[in-house]
Length: 196
Image 1 (cartoon, rainbow, N blue to C red):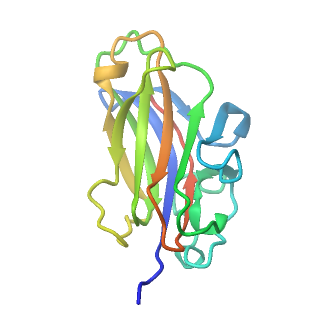
Image 2: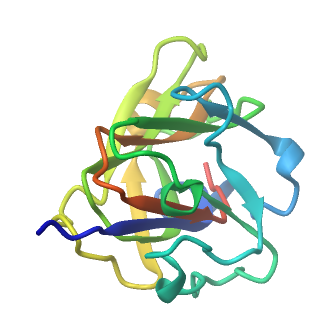
Image 3: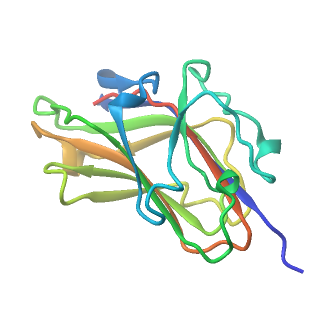
């Protein structure tokens, strides 16, 4: 008998930083209008949400909310579990900050955030671009095994200098991708403070 699993992917306090000390840019997900949410699999029926609601899926409810630094303000979440789709529908959804960030004065750039995620057959990425067309992909939570969860929260720091360093135009986004599910539901919550 196969077991159903869920994942939760929560980001909070995402920051773009120079030399991991200076904040270049930050966002706390307190204004959803700063973000573009795209469901690439089902024409908008399975999308990111920004707010403070906790997971509602059958499997994800027990995980509870993210215990991040600014959880009371808001976060972004992709709730595959709560979306309750059939077992063969893949999921791909993108959450993009809607304006470029100027990193032209910074050679070394990291994006830092707090996250909470339980993995199934999924992948989560930070993607960075200088033209909003071609994207460099940086995987996060790659070290988690199937059904394992991150700490709540887990502090993530991704070095994006190869794409963002000394660049006047830097776009960034988060991508959730699940190949398939066996009646699995996923939730993601994100709060970001970005430092470039």
